[in-house]
Image (cartoon, rainbow, N blue to C red; front, side):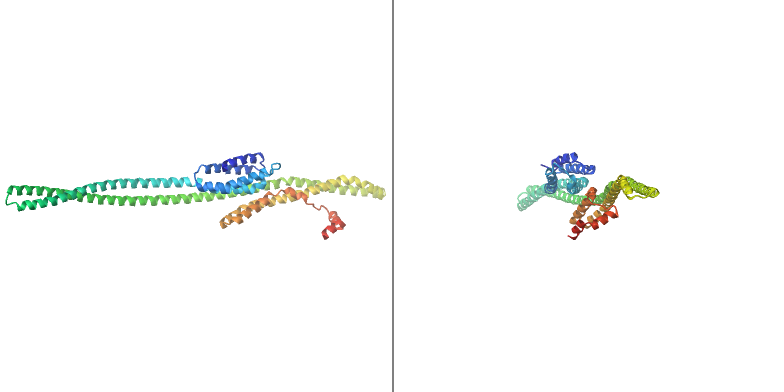
Amino acid sequence: MDAVQLAKELKVIVVKNQTDEYLTKLFDNTISKLEDLSAINSSIIRTYENKEITPILNSIKNGISSNEEEINLENHLSEFIELYSIVERLHAAFVENSPLVKELVEKLDNSFNEKIAEFDAAFNKKDTDFSSKLTSIQTALGNAQTNASSIETMYRNASTSSSAIANMESEYNTEKTNYIEQKNMYDDLISSIKSKEKEIENLKTEIDEIKDKKSTELNNLQNELEAEKEKIKDILGLANMASMAKSFLDRKKELDAPIESSANWRNCGLIILFAGISGLLYFEFYIGFDYVRFVSRLPLSLPLIWLIWTNTQRNNHLVRVQEEYAYKAAVATAFEGYQRKVDELEERDLKKLLLELSVRNMGDNPVRLFDKNVKNSPFEFLFEKLSPEKNKKEDK
């Protein structure tokens, strides 16, 4: 099964059990970029899919399948982030930058190949003409040599036939004229070839200038693309930092009202309790203090004491939870700065450790703080110190 199909099957599980909309958006972006990469015919991309992407998808899917009764996607958050990082790098290398570079290189190669093809055709044509004319000249020279021998023989016999000598002289002059014409044609051909060679040199110089110019433009374009990419990366980093920290800060702010409410109820209860006991003492002293009657009326204050104790417990827990969210917001704010520094160092292990620590710190559920007991009064502290069982545990 290919990576895209496997990711789409996993998306159904993510959507069905989603607890964080940002995880869904992250996975949708990953699938979109995987589809872009699947359309590219590259052995490097296929190797990455088989050795890096597919194992991570199978790991997430197997982890979810083994816990079908209680699916917790947060346990696989680091694998989702690692998957997105690998796909993002592949997409940036093969999809975002390569079309522009390929287009420029193809245009430059096509222009250069067309010029070379024209030069080869012209040169081959001239070479063929030159070979043909050279053969004609060689033939004419051979004929001239043969005719010269014939002329010498005929000249020796000139005394026997003056008319024959005149004819031979005429033939000789004709062949000589043909030879001169062929020689002139040969010289013209040589001049034409030299002229074409100069044109070829000029065209080569022009092509080199065009290549240098296009190469400079291409380098400038690549530099601009890199600069824009860095800007986008900085903006994305700030956006990620703000989005992660904002949710924690919002939750911290939401706890202000419950904390204030519990504190008000606790304080009101203390005031009412103090006023009630003071009034009871005043009344007892006014009518004549009786310990039995005074103690028998004290249980009436138990609901008030329960209200004070409950709100004190609630206030203490909420304050600790609020501090936990403040700490998570600080970690989220500092994460982006640490990540940039680690990227500069190019330490893969350190980057992985930073990600694990950040995910663990930001992923801990604040509800775990409710398992820890909080001392709400000096009496609890004294009771624990005076308790024999507590002292035995501490000694052990």
